Image (cartoon, rainbow, N blue to C red; front, side, top):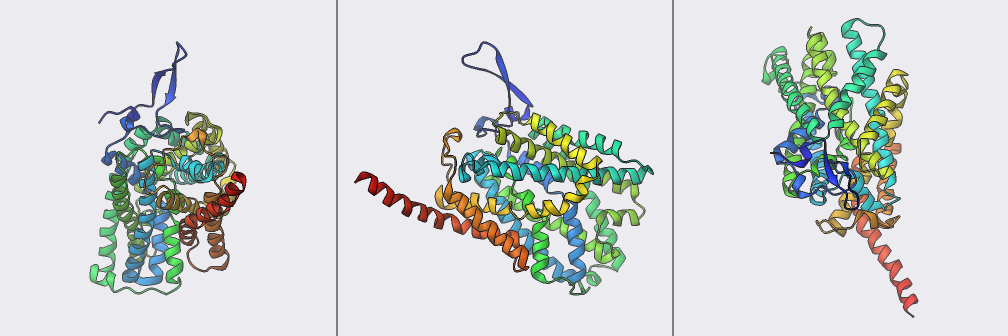
Length: 443
C-alpha cells in the first residue's frame, strides 16, 4: 500500500508563501492523519523488529536455571501476557489519537509538564544507543581480531541511524530482513538444545536451583522491555484502528517476548550458557553470532534513534525529527567511543523506574478521563500543567521507587498500576478544589 507515510518527506505549500516547504511526514508534532495510516501488517512487522531485544534472551537464560524448564515456562507466559497487555493498551491509545508517546504525555501532563517525558524518554534512548553501539563495536572487533574499536563504533553508529532517518518505512524494511533471520536462528538453536538434553521429555523434567524468587523472576522478565514498550505509540500511531493496534501488539508481544525468553532459557538449560551470543560462539558459530547480533542491534538502535528524534522534536517544538536524530546519534557515538556509555547503565536502569508510571498515567487518563476516545484537544492549547496527570504520575513513580528500594513487588508493574488508579482520584480532587473557587468567584 502506498501512503504519504511511506515517503521520507513531502512538499506542502504554505498558504501565505509562494515557496513550498518540506515537512517531516512522520508527524512528530501532530496527529497522524488517516490518509497516512498504515496497514496492520506493516505495523506488525515494525513492532516485531522493535521487540527483538537480545537482553530479553539473556534474562530468559538467567531465570531458567533457577526454576527448571516447566516452572520457567509458566513464569515466562505470565510475564509475557502482563507486558503485552500494557504495551497493547498504550498502542491502542496512540492508534486512537494518532499521537506519539511524547505528545500523549503533553496532553496528560501539560505543555510544560510533558517536556519531562521528552527529556527522560529521549535521553534514555540516546544513552542506550551509545551502549548498543559499544556492544556492536566490541563484538565486531573481537570477530575481526582488532584491538581498536572506535572506527567500528563510528561506522556502526552512523549505519544504524540510516533507517531511522528515513522514517517508519526504513524501519519497516529493516524489520522485514531481520525478523525472519532471528526467528530461523532461534528455532535452529532450539533444535540443537532439545537434542543436547536427549529430547523434550528430559527437558521438561529438568529442575532448577531455586536461586531466584518467583516475584523477582517476574520482575526481571517484565523489566527487560517495559521501558521500551512505553514508547510503542511512536509506531502504532500509524495504525488505522485502535482495536487492530491492540490485537496486533497483544499477539506480537506475547509471541515474541515469550519466544525470546523461551529460546534464551532452553539454550541455558541445555548448554549451561545464559547468554545467547556466547552460546553461539561456544557452538563454533562465531560468524553466525556476529551476523545475528549486527541485525539485532541494528533493529534495536534504529528504533531508539527514531524515538529520541521524535522526543527532541516535541521538546524543542520543531516539526522535523531528523536534526534530533543526527544530534542524538553524535552524542551516542561519543559515549561509545569514550566508553562513557559503560558507566551509564546503572543510571539508565534507575531512570527506567520513572518511565513505566508515565505509561500508567496515559492509560489511566485514556480510560477514566477520555473514556476511550480521542479528546480532540488541539496540541497548541494544552495548559502548561495538567495537575491530575502529574499527580498520578508522581504517585506511580513513588510506588515504583518504593518497590525498587525495598525489594517488595515489581517496581515497574506497581508503578503502572498505581498511576492508572490515581488518575480518577486526582481528577476528583481537582474538581473538588475547583468547585469552591468557582462558587466563590460567582458570588
